[in-house]
Length: 116
Image 1: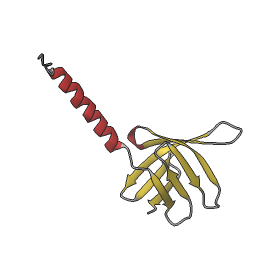
Image 2: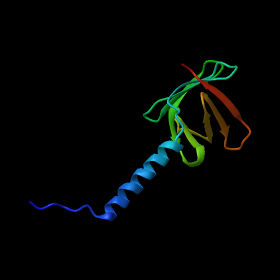
Image 3: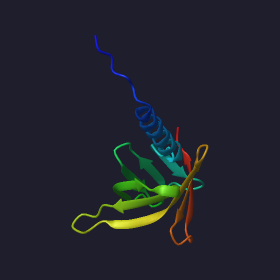
Image 4: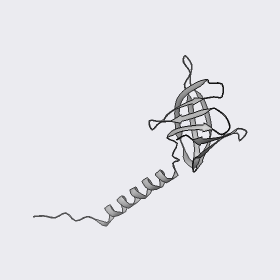
């Protein structure tokens, strides 16, 4: 019976892949679920498939896709029937059960708490 030897170079590839995968998972905030703006009625809801729903304080809702980028950056594509999507860029940070969204120009800051 002939046994294959596992070459050291293969170990390096597996270790490198595992490291990259674990770092990417650690740096990705856990957005999945429903969030409510602190002190207001607006909500955000994120799904695993990369879609979201946002309802503002007046009850108007929008849907679309979100993309988590490097360093906490996020890009939202808000779906509009009959026109191209609106693009919103900013930063998201999560600490415990609190989510903070800061617009790319830094003027708008919104804080949400995870709903049970």
